Image (tube, rainbow, N blue to C red; front, side, top):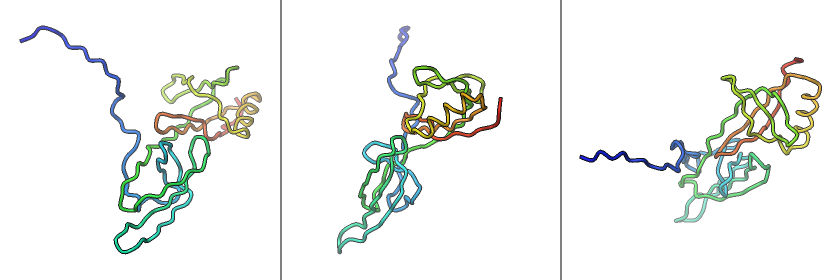
Length: 159
């Protein structure tokens, strides 16, 4: 046999899918859906029955979970839609840098320094004011389809 060692360059991730299929007719309000490649939260669902040989269609109105834009989609109810895996994780806020990045403490004690401050003005001022006052703040980070963003804030008391 061959004594050579083979080295493969892997450009793929661990194989965990960013979405999973779900039948359009089973997706409800407050569920998640991928529209135009963006993870969205469904705010309105309406189902229409069509003619003799047509499919019933689902009309989805959804809001992008990261930028707040409203998107719509119409899908036959028997077809599959992509549903994003959405996770929410709480981290303790350690520091805010001048360039707009935050330093967060993870559960295992390491730091996470690759997140920007949120673009939402009210949440941004709450985080900056609370941090300036020296409060212990816990931020919730929503992640889906390779994107992450701070989505809410909790005050756990003074330091």
